[in-house]
Length: 532
Image (cartoon, rainbow, N blue to C red; front, side, top):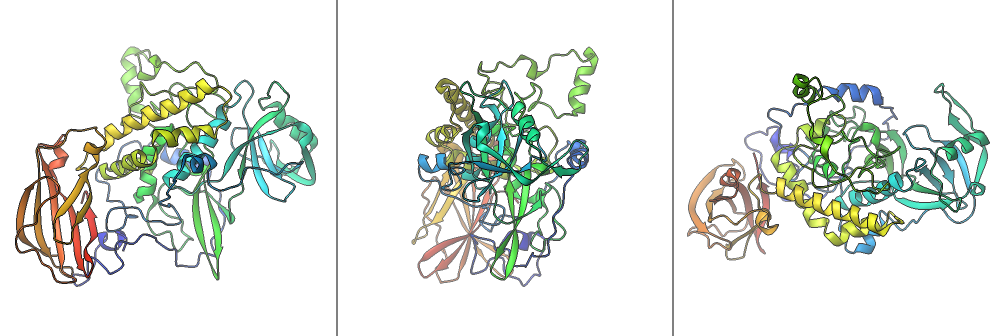
């Protein structure tokens, strides 16, 4: 049962935990076939969020988590297991790009800052093609391919992207091809439109063009999703987006890869048909403005340090008539054009900002940031990071190594910043005989020393009334022997509250809560709460 089912309030006689808890997958059971495409205005969406820069005073607990405080699989997020570096390099699926032969151009690229168009290959498969801008070969294409793989591994729905190379003669214009003119109106596409696109694209010394090709996503495109509210015509979209941990945690992952453009226009919902019903799947896309890239060149030096309209930063500079030194003014960046402005020395996870305030980011709590940081540390080993960078096909090995090294160093800063800022007890379990075992994510990551001791408070738990009756208290480290009087009948419930004494952060003194039920096979964890 998802947390939302009991956070919003239940009748007193309703059970806290059910037989299927904790759920590992949330199915969109309502038929969403009547959902209609919509277009989110970039201007309106940006203005709506531009001046909302303050964190929510008391953000609610994430509502898309299950009873053990994890995000289950859904149409928003998947707990993927990337087993090998080869899987990381490959990406979403086995597709490696368009088949050999000519590419038929079907449409011009209607949005975004990079030149490109839609093509169909000799198999009839559709791809979106984008290029690097002149003088910045590999900058945006490399960033998009690398970061798409990282976000796929972290659990998000993204398109498969690959680096591809082509010559002008590989492109054939479909007689029915269309594009959007300067007046915003659709018209017939001409050969000159292809030439115009290629003039705005970086060209290699041998005359070829380097591009990224993105496989068309499955389903009917519906437009993007907002980071606040819900989609009103989707009967399955019932959790406000700003209260989804899967979206709040993009604050962590965005800071890591410097994804400054985390906004509605860089998402896409599609309608997926499944048997006699349809549901909406939610994707992230367009990562060309990540790492050190802004899509059309290196990112602005001010990006990631300030919002595009940042009144507090402006007020701080007023006494010096705008000439006061700002943190971004003295940052050193690597001397590689294909990297742009991407570094780790000045990176501060807590201070990082996207270009426009994001409602979900502003509502991220310490437990959301902890979840993201732990996921980052667990999945993104040095080897996996280097495997993702390999997919970028950078021609300069030293530059590729610098990108991987920067990602590793930024990951480590995030882990130090957010793993120890809340009680980091994890992997709580009861053995058959009732012995309590658990870990400490911050200690395991070597970002904090072990506390002097742990205290576990044991209680019988009534699953109907949620009443807890004290059994006893134990002290020490994992494993802990339970106190006398631990219930042992099948379907009995136990609550164990664990806190640390002498921890690295005051928050460690606030207990985490774990609930277990007795089954025929032993004790089963059915509930966990890091923060109320």
